[in-house]
Length: 307
Image (tube, rainbow, N blue to C red; front, side, top):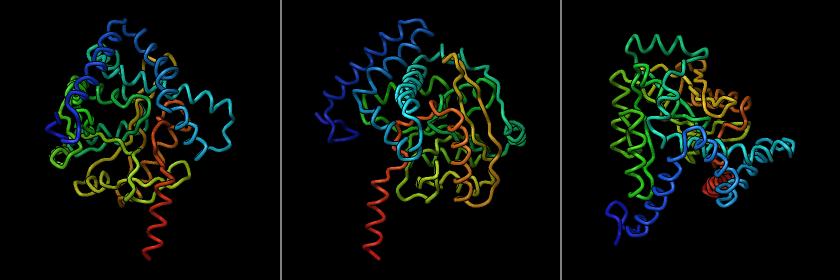
């Protein structure tokens, strides 16, 4: 039987997949917190990454933007990057334990003063972040410290699992909005009313602005900065940087991005992220298809043919 949300999906297959994932999560969550985080990092690095081809993705991305990186460092990152990704996943599903661990993490960095001033004034505020460290750390700490943050999320393809995923996100705090037309409308309205929103900006957008990241073209949507300009919002990059013990974090707010034009501001956000990644190479999700050079080449060829 097909899923009512997506008639092409098989509900029985979705239910079976969901039961398997939920069962594995249940087993892992029986392990004490610190050991659980380390175990999930190891499994992601040593089992999941080779099976899903993450090793190849990490190497391909590094070859694209850091071709002179020594092989020893590339090899290290092919294990360290999925290790961080595995930890981030199980931290999300660790709910109350994760919240208790990170809720009192202080805000640091050159953007803290601008953030506090904007919140005291009730000014719309945009926190731009990325697939770095654990982006849920800042959301958790901000909620705990009296700053409810509206977040946008992409729905899982499997509707059976999506329900559980949304529940896990909601444990940290609400409002959260799906990346649908209605959800984005609610998300932007939350900002318009003087709210605080957080959004990931390191996502490939084929039709986006031709800005750069690590010196290579990285088309990026400018909608976030357009909202900020429209509602005169304060824009600040924020990161949840994992500490050496693998369990705790620093929350770093970079310098405020001045309001100018959407493309310039989007490039500034990319530049902020690049500085943070270069200082912490193993904490960005190099698994990500951030540049998609083959898609960019295809689009360029089509544009040239059309002209």
